[in-house]
Length: 272
Image (cartoon, rainbow, N blue to C red; front, side):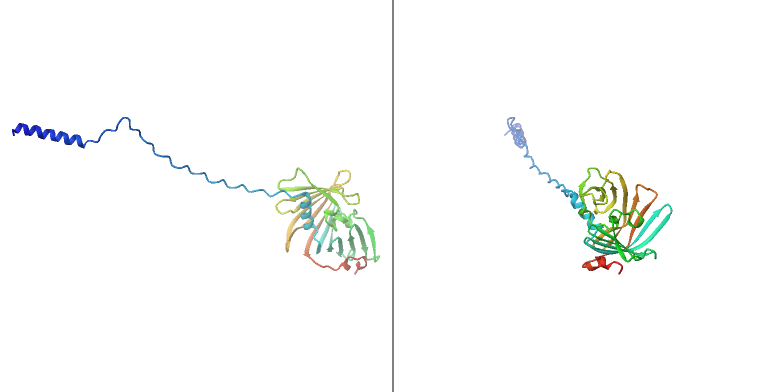
């Protein structure tokens, strides 16, 4: 075989080998398949919103106030101070309460020591040691010449004498109780009570006459704890008719009691 023929055969073999090594071009009719989308991830469930506790009724708010200011049974020692333009007068007293019975006794000053006030339900008596007898008095009279009424000092549950409602407008974070007297025998025709929502503590009380006139305003402060009971220990009664005078009740000692002897609240026990 001639050299020229061999060279031609070798060139043909190399061309065929190169052609076989090239990748075949994709047919124009072949379609590109898109990748499947990733499965959708469900959103996390929303946190449930806290459900607000329902607002208490007016009666429920008043019951809490009564439980703070007028527990079923207790014993206490107080300072009673009157502030007038002519000067201040300070008295020391002891208190006993059992249900609807209330007894207060003056311990000092000497001229007043031994005088007592007894409440049984809606009836009041003032025991005078120099007369050695008890005289009937009114719930509406000023207590020992001060700015509290007898019924303010020897206070029973407000639920007994008043119908409560919640006022639409109240100080921030407070309820405002609007109390209307059940009858004309009680001392005030209407009382407004501001009650702090976080602990049901009464912070002030306004007292109105039958004509709607504001006659007294009491501010309550200086909370103290007695066992499970937290209550104010300083009551300041402001006379809105004579603004230069006011009176205070300050609890110096207080203790909850149980099973106090009912005989302590008889008229026959006064002076003993």
